[in-house]
Length: 165
Figure 1: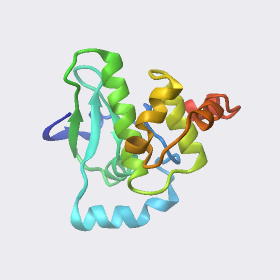
Figure 2 (figure 1 turned 90 degrees about the vertical axis):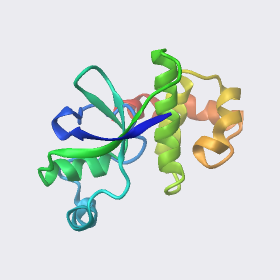
Figure 3 (figure 1 turned 90 degrees about the horizontal axis):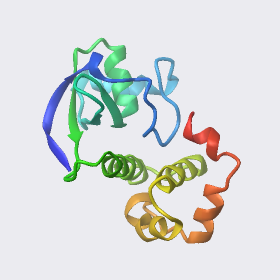
């Protein structure tokens, strides 16, 4: 799933691609990144970013949005990262893998907000049906979701807004 650890130039990261951002928005004005910035300046990046190669020169962030913004903010030249890849060559399989990784990285770090649960479910719903999402919910969301709640999330009026925040 992950190739070896690589150093990716910061300017090769597409900071506008928020497809896999599951939780709160982060960016250059994030007031909650102060301690992380101090940590990165003092210790470096402890947990590498997870990136997906978009084309020959650009990468999308799958996990580590806040760390990536901190690196950009301190004018770092490179970001230590794992490049995510699929055993298959299909774009849909790779996208589904990235969605699973993005959700699980957040879910096993802290409890997901309702908005993050809805967005994660909606992203999975692009590839899987309600039953399939329910079957893998424990390993991805760190909690079991039944098909009824999945259906409710997929039909949420917040669904469209969450996909594009």
